[in-house]
Length: 234
Image (tube, rainbow, N blue to C red):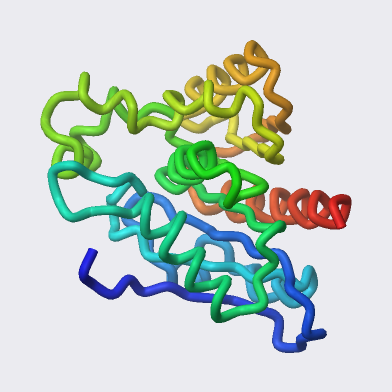
């Protein structure tokens, strides 16, 4: 994209010399990496040390929706899935076979959308309070500037449009949403679609809304699940 993209990398201070699991964490609409670390998932530094995992927090440019735009030079799918992954694997002790992508809200969409389209790169996907289909309200959240003014042209960029790509996926798929979240209906529909296609996944609902109080706790749960998944595949 011909620009620098601020990215935080959290890693354990001690190293055994071995490669370790890596999780790419995508923030929500209006978010940024420092806020992820200080407000959204403040447990990340302690969890990195405890789990011996690398966490990579890229800046999603406020409202990029983590897609490649045909209208502007906004190529966040390519940046995250290729450029950033290549950089991290070349500069850190990142285990290529234990690489996950997760996020919440807009980042939940991004994790599902990118994860489904890059299955050899990401062995696991985690979505929390994810925007499964932004078409009903995208005009209010920056979608027209990257995908144009016509919602009928947005379909192939939604995470729900990628479900068929997951039919034969070997990825660990984790989905979590609060029962008071405005997006609970979309997440239940996603769960139903995955069951219809017989795609193995873990689906969780718990009390909560579209806010940091929910996703900070749900993220900890998913990170423990990812840690166990990686341990089972050693």
